[in-house]
Length: 300
Image (cartoon, rainbow, N blue to C red):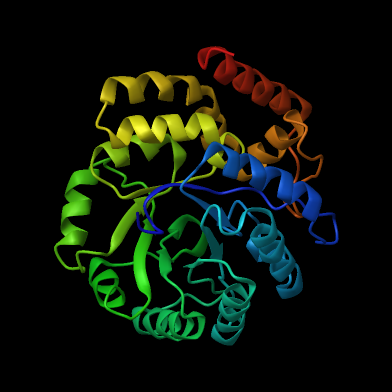
């Protein structure tokens, strides 16, 4: 299996208000993912709050992951940064730490143009010398990858896949066919946006980059395997248990909800990094009810 196939679980990165990573809590979360046998860890993605952490803390997080689960489950690490030179340095840190792959978003304060993004990705891919997945996350970066740009980037050495947002029309099959028509046969296309994860796999997507798998890896893996097997009925049945969580993700953003779930599971008690505020008590009660619904539907 390729590094960019199957279920990639994206955990939060527990840290104190100053941005110091709680390595013990992070290791506990990662061990859950390893024990569930997810296909990879997506460390320091958007859910992992990479943009809020210094280079040193990001290095500590990667070293913690490699020590906790390295060699047993592949580790893909986000290396997005404002400056190309900083992203290159982060990519070198990841390789030196012994992780397996890179995830890169075009982070910028100034709106970027296609030639700038192309040069940025070529430079980081060259510096990291690890398989790299393009992170197409227009909701955060305000940059959308055109199919032409995806095609051009797919031919750069080390760029091996893309993490796509859910298509607005939910027509995964058409989008997958269009991208595959202009990219190498070993270029892997996966999706984020958890409420569309199983649908993207049923349509032939290569990977589900999942937020909820960061804390519920076993349940999410069952959904992944049903979808990969083409068992739409079983996938729909499992997905129904997640519906209350999907609704909360859409209402509050999965980033905020995941911090509440981590506390409910006794994995850590930390707030999101400021200026992101924790959810209200009323919202937290709704998260607890959604978690209970998941467990009840899962037969626990």
